[in-house]
Amino acid sequence: MQTNPYVPIPVNVDKIITEVTTKDIKTFRLAFVNKEDEENFKYLPGQFAELSVFGKGESPIGIASSPTQKGYIEFTVQKAGVVTSELHAMEEGTLMGVRGPLGNTWPIDYLEGKNIVIVGGGFAFTTLRSLLNYMIDDANRSRFQNITVVYGAREPGLLIYKDELAQWEKRDDINLNVTVDKGDETWKGREGFVPTVCKEVAPSSENAVAVICGPPIMIRFTLPVFFDLGFSRENIYTSLEMRMKCGIGKCGRCNVGHKYVCKDGPVFSLAELDGLTKEY
Image (cartoon, rainbow, N blue to C red; front, side, top):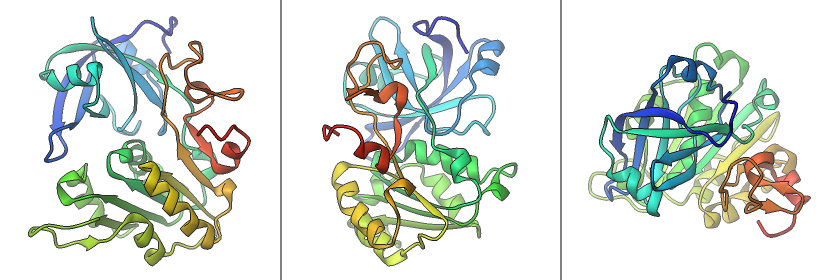
């Protein structure tokens, strides 16, 4: 871990992948300039980092790669402001900075030995991808029971990680359910909103934990499905990333009651969120 939390680690943009047809979501594969920095950057799924564009600023982004994928870290970024626009304008080989890893993680120890249900919508699948790749790694797969995934987007062109979705589809140890709100002439898969598909798939709540990330409207209509399936609020986790700025609980921008999303989160169970203000 770096000694000064405000100083970014130098990294090079090693690879850029345009994820969606609208070209406003890209995945950046970053390689550490110094081997020592790479060895010290120890993270788990669910954490985020501040991506620094020199002279422009920094932005908190969830880590999309898994720590089981050695030699690089990946971030999937939607073009939405000054820093992310600068990122999208970068070319491979550009020098930039990373500050982190920051925040807490998906509850890996708690998930161990349980059936896992991953539910994601659109762009908010990034740290879920990290978690899934972590769990299905050969070194970890036996630690987790059945894995069910429901992932959806508005249309086929807005699905991210299409190559990995195809790879996961071939595995017999993942119950993968990919859906779009409305398909096009090329789409041969499922159509339907994520909450509806969750209801159709109906994962058992027995010895199970659900991790859910997506647009607020998706989460709003998905949660009642899981309550009906018998999932307790202690066994439903989500990730908040709104309002984070400094990433280390100093600027006060993301505090909710006595908690800081960047330091105490961004991962919370619904039971934990019940103890906070209704701001979120």
